[in-house]
Length: 78
Image (cartoon, rainbow, N blue to C red):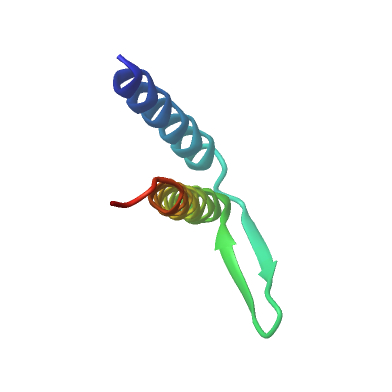
């Protein structure tokens, strides 16, 4: 049940992000440390939504690995 709720929320937020992005076709300027680019709001929403998803997945994987490592070290081995 938890998996279904998570997938529903994920799809809902992705849908909201793309609807928001598709309604905004204005050009924005993104300034990086060494570069500058002009992209539409839809592209920016897509890029940053994907980056947020990837960073969230990576943090979750690292957190679970650390938790497994601590659990393995705390159990006495015979």
